[in-house]
Amino acid sequence: MPGFRTALRPNGFRFLAAAALAVGALTAVAFPTAAADPLTDAAGVIEQLRAVGDPLPPLPAPHGPTTAIVVLGHGLLPDGGMRPELVARLRAALVQAMVSPASPIIVTGGNPRGGTTEADAMAGWLVGHGIAPERIHIESRAGDTVENAVNSAEMMHTLGTGDAVVVTSADHMPRAVADFVDAGVAVVGTVSPQDLPPVVLEVFGPQQ
Picture 1 (cartoon, rainbow, N blue to C red):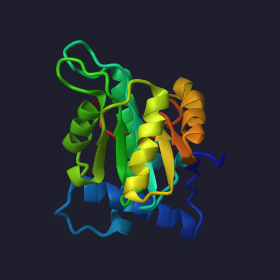
Picture 2 (tube, rainbow, N blue to C red):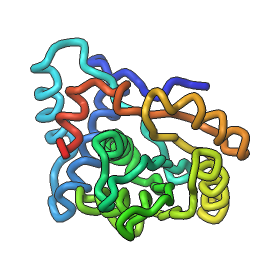
Picture 3 (cartoon, one colour):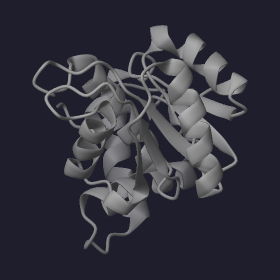
Picture 4 (cartoon, one colour):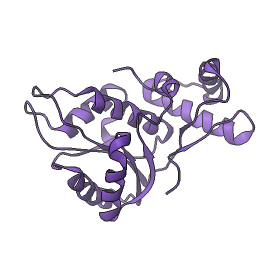
């Protein structure tokens, strides 16, 4: 399976285009009314990243509208609040969403607590951090990883997406990918908060 990310290096058109895409997507999500020049914005964020050191840290690979970003849930607190591990997954998903602004996002997880499912809690967090509600598709029936995969595969078929980037914790990823492949999903990338450099999460993702 191909790697989950592509390294951005300050050497040529590929770097500039990828950086512009990433920062342009960030601007569109965080400031939808702004008419910013993506190359100018890219330079500012690149300088923030470069201040930490060279070479520049990698970002997740961008994808288009036929690739779904699938975010797997994690057990909620008794009152329906999210545990830090789930927030970490969402921060990683937000970075992927920013560099892939045309990709639909599936949040999957049932197991309600305090009247809230994992998927509903995740959707609320993403909307609260700038993702358009119409971009988010809620799968709130799954009770385990196998059901995450099977139910997401059904939703992907309805959406017309052909493959997926799976977002979950690093120690959960091997089992998750295996279950998605068994469900017939072509997994073209994986993103976990543990594998993203902290500087990327700090610049492109919120802290809570």
